[in-house]
Length: 329
Image 1 (cartoon, rainbow, N blue to C red):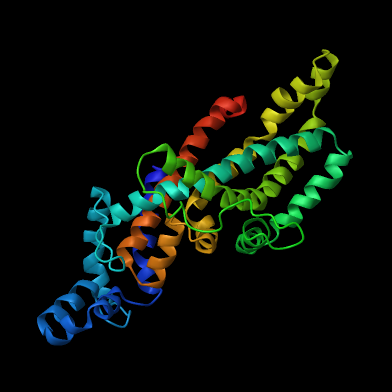
Image 2: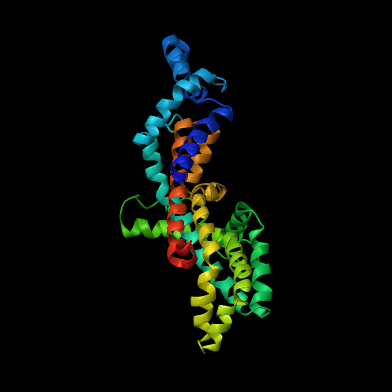
């Protein structure tokens, strides 16, 4: 019931926010074909009737009438037609861009989560050692920079070969080589993976520090618990105590953060996709939002909402498996 109410609230905000932000898809459609609407008065009236106004100030009565139709269309999976991408169905836009976003955002989130959690576990277990004194501060410093700034630095030093080392290790833009046709072939897949390496590297550098600090801080408290002392008294190996006992109980907050982080599959990569001209959902959302493309904006945000709610539901279920205290409660 909670997730159903949250889903309805997200759908309602998804409907209201683009309209309250200003701008109108009608004006964008007219600019794309001004001659037709200049000479066809019925076409202009029909356009205004469909989208409310030309100046972005949609009347309350029009929004009230459009809201039930919007809800019914969303529940049926009818996301409408884009007003920015030449009348392309929104489902086609999502189908084309979602795999690219999942590739760079999903892969970077998974890598940063696993790497950061493991390093945080080791730093907490070896508290005060060289690794603990260097890694948290270094990764926190790197993560403090905006992702687009690190992306520009990465392109400059690792893509264009500038700087003292002249390293041209990675492609700097687009999702695949111009000489490759987009098809299901190993050549195309290899080219996409090659072009995704630098965006993934940037996002991993930005995100790893947060996972490390979260894991380290929780595990430092758990290491001092009585059950860790009992495990040591039993003569268990340090590696088993660190991973099975302290690590398992300390990673639960990171699992919650991982579920929330799934929402950044779209929003967290907008600027990175823009810098690398990577055709993912983040770039499509940015283009749609600036062009007052309500259907595309709403469709992409709907996918984001469903992903976040499903991820939180799955993580709540995993909590029951990982933490016996939740089963007792």
